[in-house]
Image (cartoon, rainbow, N blue to C red; front, side, top):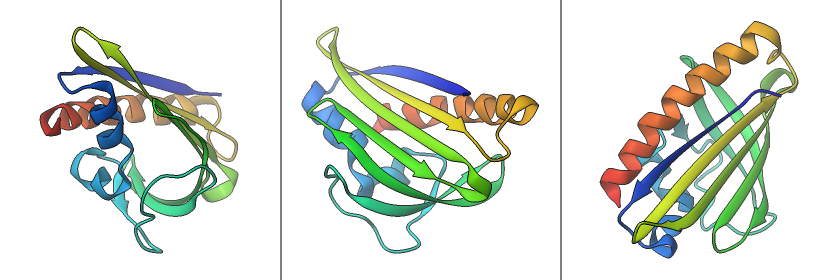
Length: 141
């Protein structure tokens, strides 16, 4: 199962960094793969919340049906179903670091056409996008 994790340190407190990183209304400001909310913005994250997000990865748009599988004060786990049987998991965690916080974003891909060389390409592209996204998040914090 291909996955990629990127981490960045922010000057914001862990609570403020987590609030910013998990606020779906702000995904468009920093999450570079976010395109739109086809069924409307989902609102505040809550355990069990389900929503659809249009993402764009490797230039290809795709709708992902997400469920908030886990939500604590420092970790959010999203599991999603994408096109052609693909499954996705995103994990955002925040921990104290150097007087501020460290935000980690893990993206995991499986199923459908995400196997072999395609999985490597998706993972590499996702890693690049996560680096860009976290840099934008740092500017907002």
